[in-house]
View (cartoon, rainbow, N blue to C red):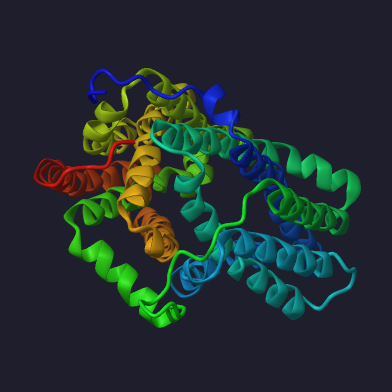
Length: 412
């Protein structure tokens, strides 16, 4: 059916696929556990040290290992059966987080266990992303990614919103134990709910591709295809969009708000993403979604220029909601990227692109913080970064438009 006529796949048809239900349910319950663990770790470290700096460093440790694990360990999702990679990674994380729940562990050992736990995140997420195109076909794949994005964002919001109350009630040690249980449950659900498939990546003689060879091949695949290069750059524009998140607390103070004000600002962008993903997935035809990726990437940054007017709470929430809704392009961009990458390299390519995304977001947060110290205004900082972001996004969107017209795209 032609792009402009094809109807989007329904969420019901996606949830009717047993393998997807297993992957989705395993992910859904573990998302809340992960957010609960982040709160638990912050509370535990603060109680032990009395320092505000150490909890911030501990929180950073839940993200930084992905920068290393992404490029180096994601290739495991191509060298070994992807179901086995997911199950073993979850089982390993269940054990490591369970050890973290033991009372009285030295902080250095706690940090070591945390880094090891996060390193296992890279092969798991790469295997999960790489197996999805085999589980769902056509536009069901994009609809499935939309479901995962919406529930993931909702789960994170719920985890942060309820995490403090739950940890206050049961204590940080038990909170970590709950997270360990969610990993174990996820491993069991995937073990019995997902079909086994052979490893996708192999040399011509049937031997496994080395991690280094897979890394080089993945990088070459992305760099040599203008469609993939453009999609990666469009995803990395998130480094501009994340700046208001890093400055939510000082911006709340700048407009005379409180910690509750900052909480509302932090929740606005994820809420906009949930709404945008739902509407974009339900109302826009598959082919049109691909054509709109570049436009929406630019529009995801444009509303943030409005911070130059130093808007109050409600107008700022409106700007963040609009930005989040347009950021729904990331789902279609990611789905298109994964469908274009050869199956044998999907895990490695996902790891490279994902690590770059984390790095871009990290750079955005650092630059935003340093610039705010110079300009002495979080509002002006967000506006300046956004203005630069628009200037960067325009040629990237144009590159995607050229690549889409030059080379055919796979139907989604």
